[in-house]
Image (cartoon, rainbow, N blue to C red; front, side, top):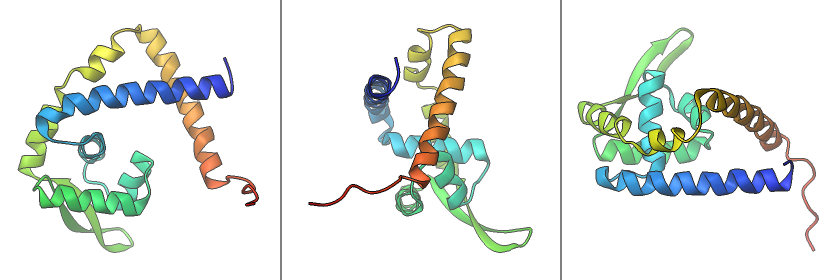
Length: 151
């Protein structure tokens, strides 16, 4: 399976997993995007907005608005840090409330249940394959080629 059929299968899988996570996250009142951001903030140890944007493969302006919404709900805070040559860099950190929500999200079972249908070896192979596909897609995002002619 290659090309269009593979792309369709990836899209269908994404939609099904996304919807299953969306339903599960209703219990904590978070969107999938917010839960992903909280998890990445925790895993990256207080990233900058641009680091978080890259990790989530999202545009910086959409990350900024997401961080703003998470700040308003008391889940994250912006902290000024001096990192090397960059003075007054702003990093995003979880608040105590954000840590509590992270623990609830991390204990949710949809991802574990879905992952349980394949073996560890299959999971490793899938991870390698998806990483290759993601890298190829990121290259296409940076160089989309000629735009279609408008009529």
